[in-house]
Every structure is written in structure tokens, then in C-alpha cells.
Image (tube, rainbow, N blue to C red; front, side, top):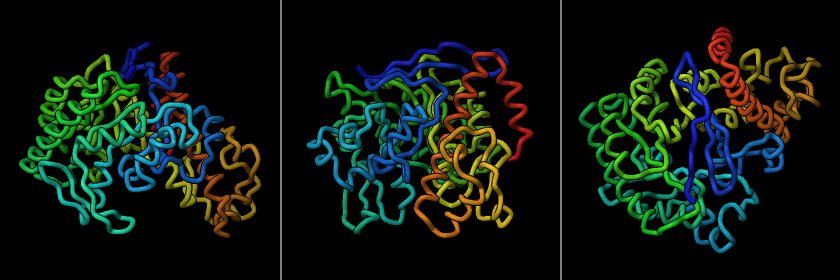
Length: 371
């Protein structure tokens, strides 16, 4: 029960590693990118297409499902897997980032978070214990603790205060999860500390004593310069447990994924491929492509000649531009299936390069390609 993790191979020239994340709903090869299905759906994509892309792990969001349709409703319908007809693994974020995003609608206290729904203004309260109870009702394979996502910029004193609150919440989350005894899912702690490496290390030390199944790095990619993000990561990742999965939350571009894998990160999620797809920004082997550009009006080529996704196998750039300019719903679907496929394929190539000891060459080639 819970989750397990095994490191299968390490890279000789970096901190990258190949692994297997074992869950109650199947094994997941790592490094892995997790498509974001906030409200129990990856926007614009039916689940059978995700299965065709060999997606093994999805992310859904506790905050959103708590508000609509409600975790009690989902539990009565058999849990989140049955509700959304997805028999593979699901990770549920705690909602800490959403509370951070809607900070004008919330008040943080030692007890938890009081907030107004962004949907209808109704008032709610989430404590660390309540967040765990919601995820237990959903039947998550991997549940995340409630944390306070520290904004950037943030002074050291405020960052330390925020991190300390997150660690006290983490202890309460772990106690509530453990009270259930044996459960089918696992639970991850979240490292905080803003851009201060010593606070990050202190956060890890506190989480290690709580018996989590894995640790995530939160509170990055919230506005800080990318080089600073990478500097903080490089100082943080070596202190994470070797025999547990390392999860970087909310990052990033395809090139970011490769750089962070080289630092030793195993798991990633980000809304970038799906959000960009709906806005007509597409990731290709030649760099980003803005499909609305007039240059594609009569372009008969596939979106990406190196991609074998449904979109690239069948449709031209000209047709994809037409759909986007006409505001057709199909535009979001075809663009999203390509971007998600590109991300998943990028991770497959990273894993293949680790098996063949060629990550360095692959990273070098990627760095020369425009993002």
C-alpha cells in the first residue's frame, strides 16, 4: 500500500536518475511529466487520447474538486478514479498554490486558510487535517500536504516564518493521514523556503522526520529569475532522500525539464503545455511556434515533422491556423494533444538517453535549440 520508489540507474555525468514509482494504479517510469487535470480533466483532451499517449499519471486539484462538485459527492460515486473514468495513477495537489493565487480572497492563520470561493464568493475553511480528509475521500494515489506558497520577492524573515508555518502544517497533515492506518495512497511533503538555500535545507530536515513517501519542491517558478531558480534547485536537491521520488512543482519548459532532470529531479507538472496550446503557442522540435502567424496561412506541412501525434499525422499548419483564427473548439483539442504529446515524448527521450548514457549530448543539442 502507499507508494514505492526504486532507482534503476544513475547518470555518470550528472545527478540524473532513472526510476520506477509504484502506485496502487500502476507503475510510472521516472523522470516523468504529469499533465495537469485540475478539475478531473486535462482541458480539451478525452482520457482515451491520454491513454493512447501512454500517460500513466495525472494531476488533479483538491481545492477545485472541494469546491465543485465536492469531495463527498465524488466519494459517493466511488472515488475520483471511477468518477473520471481513469484507472491509472492520480496525484492530487493540496490547493496551497490556488490559495496563494487568490490571495485577495483568503486569510491565513495557524489553524488553516479561510477563503472565499473564486466561483461564487462563498466562504470556506481548509485546515491541514481537512485537506488530508478530502484527498482520502478522493482516493488519491499521491496526496500533497497543505502548505503556504511563499511569494517572490520575499524577505528572509518572512520566508522563514512562512516556511515554519508550512512545516507545522506538514506535521499535522502527516498525523491525520497516518490516523487512517493502511491506505491505498501515499503522501508527499513539500519543501519551502523561498530562494534561501539554508531555509530549504532546514525545511527538508524537518520533513525527513515525519515519514513521508516522497518530497516535493514548492514555491519556485513564482516570479523569480530562472537562473536564481536553478541556483536554488542545485543547492536543494542533493539534500533530498536518495531512495524517494523528488517532485518539482509547477515547472516548466521542455528545456527546463532536461536541466532539472540533470540536477536529480524525478517528477514534474506544469500547465504550460495545455495553457499555451489553447493560446496557439505550440512546442516543436524547431522551437515554439505561434500558429496565428500569417506565415502559416497556406503552409501544408505538419506542425512538427518529427512528431507522430494525431495532430501532426493528419493536419496541416494551415488548417490548425484556420481553426485557431476561427475560434473553433477543435483548435484547443488538436493543439493540446500535440503539446502534451511533445512533453511526454520529451520525457521518453530523456529516459532513453539515460539508458544509453547519452543525456549529456542530448542536453547539449537541446540547449542550442530555441525554447
